[in-house]
Image (cartoon, rainbow, N blue to C red; front, side, top):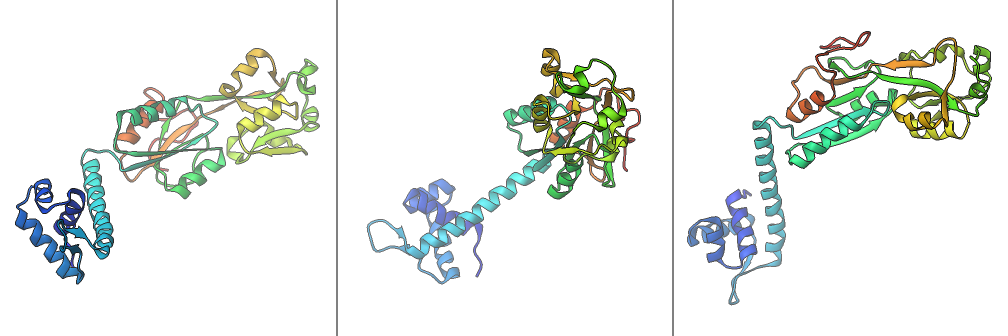
Length: 305
């Protein structure tokens, strides 16, 4: 059996417009052209698709079922045409982005919002993960852009540097590590609960990693971690931009420690090295990378890894 797109269009037009004459006008064909296409469709399927006994030709029950499948063919044709047009203009059919919640999201969400308002033909998907979970999600989803503070283990990724992100070792102002008002020792840190986020990784090179704190609470994300800090449960590292309000109000304060209470992350935007970014991906990259910089000091080099 062979069903052509012309036959599918003829059946669809007749169902929509009700008469052969109106169907022919909608298709910009001669009346006989529509008649021939529908007769050929009936011969090809071996079914009676049209009820011609009444004043107006109607679809038979078999015709209704065949119509549904014909419309699927026409939808597939339109999808194919759209896909080809998208690729001809340089826009990607889809763009999957996975970003680390350590990194300020405002710039990313701003450019994604701009692309959506402009009605670009790229389907955008944005997923937030944390630390070690970022690359796992990037690989699992087959995503196109990854924003991470950890150097990736995936090979053949191209890296572009973003502005650094500062993280602070903090606790509630009434927590013992802060309330005493003096610098704390390693033993005093070990005696308290250390709060971490799932996905924490040795590649972060945090100074507290060498302490071997006996009590560690692992939380789902930095929002849960901030809530736990505000409840006085323990101390931990927090990206400064996520606790700016709490620091200004004095509800959270830095823990004074001889090894330092500041850590700087160097996030990068990663894309697949074997293919050039499309127009949507390039807009995202341009909005996020550090001006005139391909890498941050100590970060991965631009190019493939």
